[in-house]
Length: 337
Image (tube, rainbow, N blue to C red; front, side, top):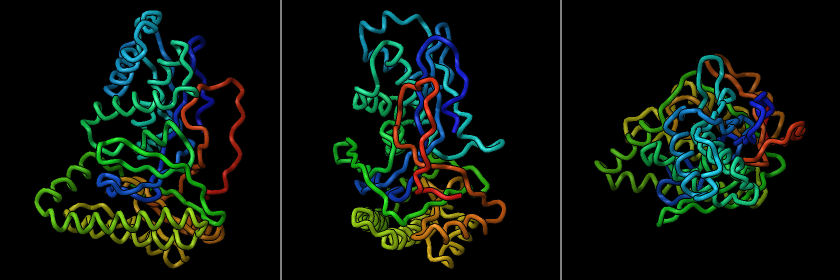
């Protein structure tokens, strides 16, 4: 997509991809697995001398990166990072594809690369700094899985350990699996949705634990089906997960699964697939999964307003310094519009 946009001459340009959740929303907050795919919508970042921070995320990323590199930071002129996130917009709407996480990763990466530190050789360092910056800017809301996707790219299982650390396992999608990512016609606040679920956890702890246990179990089954190479098994698990997200939303009095998303789920079911929110829910981005390309094609064509399929593909490379003239990646075959 936009990783080849024009930028200033001089300092290195760093790009970081967005993400989608295939499964594991909310479960990852309770040590369950999540599966994410990095997608080819990019935050494009460049260190600019004399510039002031353009957002809280950028401010946190730059200050933490400079503190981390110590004396090497003294060689940098005063300034901050310019980050272009136009790829994460559709007309006048911001899409919930992880722009803030990609911004944190790209901003940290731009500081490191400008200081002569290769992010390709320091991914663990990049991840730790971007996670800390993103959490500080987002008031500790969220799992950090979107930051992992922006750093590493590809398809991966992410889990949060009891001590708060994140584990990452690369995955390979079954050959028949096809994804259709679509916009439901409205934006949503991840922070508000997560805070609403946290209120439910405090007021109804027993019901919360029961729902979370089922979400963890289904997410684990989804991972097992991917490992086994079963597209049909993965689709079936995704359908069950979507239904449990509806149960969570009803119990917490939150519109996790909106009416447009519910209509999309009914359409996907008719075609032998599954559709569910991708992320915290409440609108915004959703994902449909099918075991055949034909079913995915029919679904994408049958969507009606406000639903709209998005032109996305898998990003395999994660955060990286952009090389002039770098060719676009080949079609992964996993996504369909």
